[in-house]
Length: 470
Image (cartoon, rainbow, N blue to C red; front, side, top):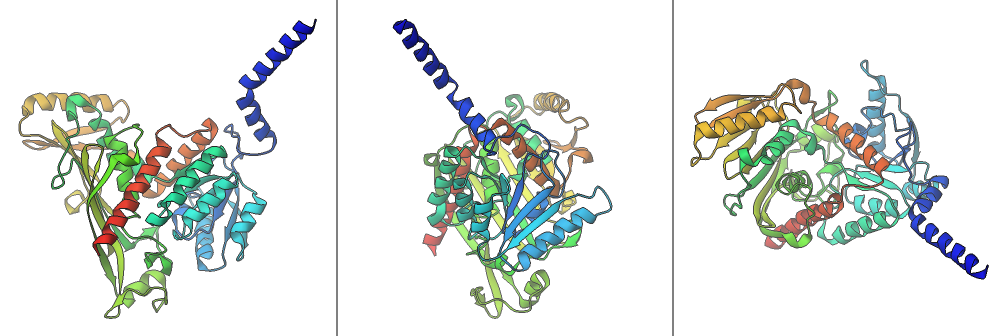
């Protein structure tokens, strides 16, 4: 009898150990923590210190899984007012109005109040980047899932804090994810898809510092329209100690795309990165330009980089680096206002052993992204044309309606139906929908977290190298 009791206890202990993970998750679910099933309204959103319009774009549409009531915690000031105006505009628009309900808390203890009350299980963080890394770490330490706008970190000194945040997120079983909208742009999606067809692309060249294998260039504008209205930017947006220099801001998107396209679903490491050269330079804003985009007549005292009465904003940067054995280049430039009919633009080239895949968005393209395929000189053009047509035909099952047009003897233009060109603002909803799926799965893809870490290591190391040159 004694042996039977011991055996029974041993079996019970073994079964308990085997089901420990599920029991712990069930316990968390009973405690109301971060367990998601995809049920209606189970995601409770909080928005922390929304100083950037991207915070509002997450709410441009409704989501079945997200409760309409959102809790906003922010310091008093114009940023939170501008955010609420955008949410109200979404609620009051004539076509497909949203139905968000917002409870706002403002006060100097807004962060502590959110962490104390925790009325939500996901926090959206998009605003002043000087505090963003601290916000992220505080949220994941409190067991809150985080959907953060880029960049998650803007200085080399705070990179270790971001690494700690990812560590704490894993320990607390919450998901920390950044909003990489450019992965959803259709010409980039098809560029990546064609690069994965060796019969068309061959393989990615290694490149050189002077002629990188993959290049991503982006031109942005301080004055722009969002949701049909002129964008009012907060004055701190022009302070690189709060917004971040060009080297660590928009470059986040470009480095992400390089990793995503050149090494799809490959787990990368910091030791895979070598910064080769860097360059940074300012955009000059007159007082009149500053007033037009901020609605403020004078530069605030914290904007100290002023020469000849004009503000010098170090929003531009570029760097060449090696990722594993591939040479890559990213470049970001901010201008004041786009030409009539134009907007932010993107240029990209992937150099393959059989062809180059090129995205242009200039005047010739009507400032709309256009994908070109240019065969390499050593290839037989007729043989390549057959392979390219077959490759595009295969992709048409996923993207019905795409087709090729011969531009010249060695170049093709890929026509993409307008239904796939949903626009930058819609991409925020697509990222949010993907994040909601990850919450249900209780995990990100294995490569996402290490590659986010490598991405921010790349941008902050480039920043460090650029500052050393000055």
